[in-house]
Length: 76
Image 1 (spheres, rainbow, N blue to C red):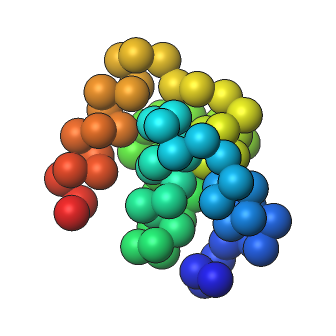
Image 2 (image 1 turned 180 degrees about the horizontal axis):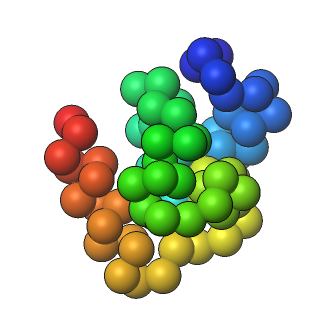
């Protein structure tokens, strides 16, 4: 388990649909140990929004989805 992520969040992310951009972002951030705070600051959203993206509870808008793709690509 990644440092800073609860077991519940990691499990929820693993069980969520990887096709959702927020879930993909979550998997990347968990693997790289990038904090929810850092992600929320970068995207200008609340930490709760990031948690919901990671769990697949909310799907980011198309504009944010494009930013997520660039964010993941930039960090690889």
